[in-house]
Length: 51
Image (cartoon, rainbow, N blue to C red; front, side, top):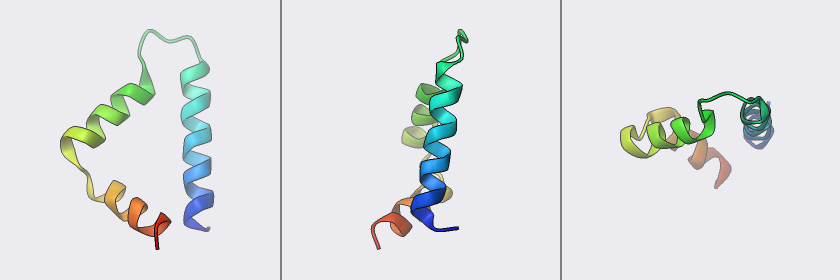
């Protein structure tokens, strides 16, 4: 699967999760994790998109 397609799938899943009325903001928690921890999977994904 093409990296852009994978990212679109992930973003679509996040939109669906955020649309469900939960008291927990899923997207905000994932963003906070990415900003604070800088996981390797995120930097790899960014590199694949901008190649």
